Amino acid sequence: MDRVVILRYGEIHLKGKNRAFFENLLKRNILEKLHGVGCRTEFAYGRYVVSDYDPSDEADIIAKLRTVFGLFSLSRALRTTADTDDIAEAAVAICPKTGKFRITASRADKTLPYTSVMLATEIGGRMLERYPALEVDLHSPDAIVYIDVRDKNTAYVFSDSLPCAGGMPVGSAGKGLSLLSGGIDSPVSTYMMAKRGLKLTELHFWSYPYTSIEAKNKVIELARILRKFTGSTELVIVPFTKVQEAIHKYAEPNYMITLVRRAMMRIAERVAKNRGCGCIINGEDLGQVASQTLESITVTNSVIRDLPVFRPLIGFDKNEIIEISKKIGTYETSIKPYEDCCTVFLPESPATKPTIRRSEANENKIENYAELIDEAVDDAEVVVIS
Image (cartoon, rainbow, N blue to C red; front, side):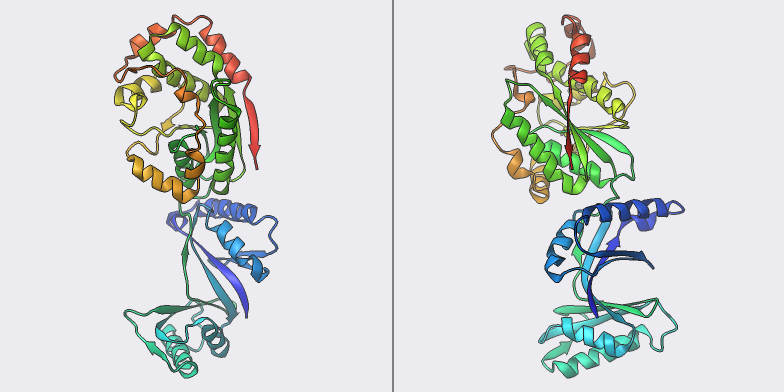
């Protein structure tokens, strides 16, 4: 009898002939997450099992695995033979000594000399003999002991099932570029698209000296927090000062935010193509601020030529976004008082219903605008988050 962790996947069950592609990606991501941990990982017979680890490492193993997208749940279990005496020993070891309980048994190997019902009855009886204060309750038990008998004379006995991150394995949906500011929203949008299987590169716009070194380091910290979900990634930091200064100098004040967003999207598409990304992700939430009205989003999107722009938070309210940010561990970093470039040169009354024609007219006033965009792309800094 040995201690193991059983892993279960979710949506991959719905895949057809290409299911092996998703399974292999999930296996790779599990192995990457457990790199450096002394354990054995087995992938066979419809079960992913982590075994041969030091019991003192179990909590760390579980914490790591619960952040792997594609895994639905996991259980700490005892693995034994399919012999009823061995199963009973394991069940007695994990069951409570008092209260109401139920046995739930399943049997994949139909050649064994007992059915699932027979096994549950036999093991339940032995538990009652060992702990007379226990009481069987099939409908509202305080504890459930699960017995899963597999092929190759192997059985797993467990009593808990912990939820994991869900979603699809990172990398299964291709590559994307996620705009990462220092705020609350963009880390959540990054997390949500990683959950749908995108392998992400992150992009940050930095306007030194209007934004500080601390603001830059804050975003690097956010990328490191997100790494437990995204896996190893790159953070591209674009120097945005000259572009913002030019917009501030030549544009109508109420169009400055619109032009800043358009410049960001132009740069983002260039960076995405250079790094092999097939989409752009941002944390816009419809109606939250002036740059996120229907008209503003339309004008901003109009500069994108080839790639789709995903906005996973478009229908969320702020409280929902905050709750997710707290759950994934980015909230406390996001609220640190270091401003990002979106707060530089804010006008008193930004346009909430800008037009493409007027935006282009403002951009035409900016001297060497195309060269400034080129320079920002060429001078980008890449930070490896691994």
